[in-house]
Length: 256
Ligand SMILES: C[S@@+](CC[C@H](N)C(=O)[O-])C[C@H]1O[C@@H](n2cnc3c(N)ncnc32)[C@H](O)[C@@H]1O
Image (cartoon, rainbow, N blue to C red):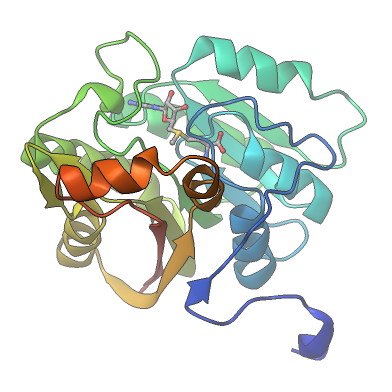
């Protein structure tokens, strides 16, 4: 708090971010990644140097690269072997942090527990300080052909049940008073909006001892450009009776 003015932390609930940060190791190679500004804001606000951060769906390593810059230790999970190899190729022994990358199904309680217990032992810790989670938005973008991949689930109830189970696998290891951030958007299916974000939020609130600390709405940059260049999207939205998604949510929970 002594440096609150220069912290660069955005405390507003609407984030208009027009440009993706592509500096350092951030290359935007992975379709379905989030912008580095999201984990940066979250890590700056909810963690300090030396803390342990878990990314449940680490994808192309956006959170890991931010954790390196901010000197937070990192534990990440994903099942996409190709993208894990890509992330590993960007890392070397000069990294200022301890980091652990697991090719592991996050819904598998036993496997996740084994990874977390082992990493925490090495880190000489019992609990993690922060969780970030950016799951597939149901089956909107497919990531792998694996059956465990949540991006194969087209049924809402099935998705919520699997996601809640995965969240619980990691939440057990979060310290009391620690924060968890979920980044998620809504989807269209069969001609109507499924408010996936709200369903996920509700499930977390109903199933875990948490206080809801924030609902941030973030714009998805790029769509505006798309509209400007070619108004086919405008036409399609009117013709097919839908609104173009411009936003995603960041839900922030605090473990009670
Ligand atoms: C939305 S992406 C995350 C992108 C990441 N935030 C980034 O910036 O690159 C979701 C990720 O979840 C992974 N995934 C899907 N099902 C999974 C599962 N059961 N266990 C672990 N990872 C899974 C996918 O392989 C994909 O990389």
